[in-house]
Picture 1 (tube, each protein chain N blue to C red):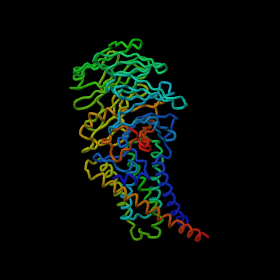
Picture 2: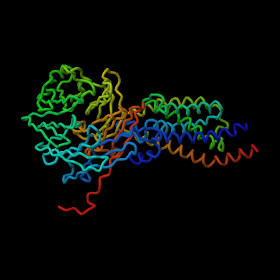
Picture 3: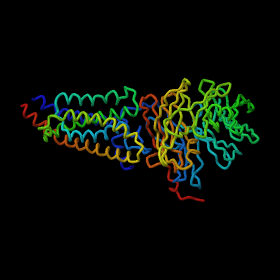
Picture 4: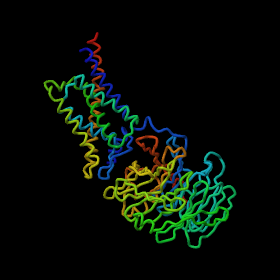
Length: 178
Length: 387
């Protein structure tokens, strides 16, 4: 676990930690939502491939913007709310970071009816994560820690994909506009 | 459609920026606003057989040793530190060869350090904060001593087998005397002649009547600043509690619900206004695993706010020693609580627990905790040792 603690020290301040069954997670309560919730959101995004309609993009933008009052501590909050807002942020972040890679892949072709299932599964994940951080099982911390690693790896991969694709996409848009 | 063509790349950039901002925010970019103060705290390094006092600069988030001592045994005697009343010098106190050595370190001038020796103290470790009234430091234990920090003059009085511990509310010098069988006497000390004037007693029977059978008052007393009440830790058989004492004696017993079983309490600290206490709290949360929190307990009841500080190894006898090492200290402006793990015994430390000063930001609704690592021990073998 100390290796994971060091890994997450580069992206997380590691204060206010959940300690399922007495063992501290290697990331803070909000990053628990972001990275563990991120792994879940990424899996659902791949599974259901929601079509990026304007309504869906607006909803995800709201989830990202929700972090402004909570991240800047304008709203009093406890550990559960920190994790919840991190998880909602992760959902929005997954959608936005997935847009450009998906322009190449177009995974939603031929799958227009999955949005309800996508939102339902996302909602189901919220209480699951809050239950997991309060679990008394000794498996909870390693499981959550490695899910967090998966979430971090997913966001890192999406970031790399964006950094690789964005210049190309912007060039294509400029050319088509001209 | 051309708008949609631009939308996805732009939203992708927005996502990247949002994650970057999140990481910067979480790793501490926007937050703590130091007030320019510094913190003194003890640390130990059993591996190097050293213990010392660190001066933490909250602006620079740095620490340096102002005092280091080395022992031939594995665990050197701890040193303790506090500020002189006017903030000009650090007072470092520690037991060596049956004497209490009190050393004054001028931190912002080139004046030499001054040391005073109070003899015949046995193994009496000082209980901090050592009360200071005017320029005189008063030390309790099995002897009662007054030390003038300017002149070095000492007045010393043996206590005939009794043991008193001292504190001050800024105007009075207060004592607690253990009477045995769980009873304790509280009173004032007359600074002129160091005579004791009892005020009231807190008995084991009183504690039992308040639901604390086998309760025992600990000799660390926190007087209410600008008030008349005292807060003391009561060690119970099944749980710890806080006794609030008024001028007439035991006023109330606080048995806070910390949300964890068998929590142990350290030395309490009053918040300004006298309606809230800050408590160091430790509990075993798993096999061999402990967690250290700072709790905020309202005297009017209500939920207890717990802020996690650090995990620790809950070895077999942790409940006996660990809570005694826990102290919190409130900054003069009431905005920050300081506590430290730097002086813990090696066996209490987990791989994740740093020897550090921990600062709890009380102005932050999230109670952000930041840490400043204790200074590395100077290499004692850099020069060839001579016997």
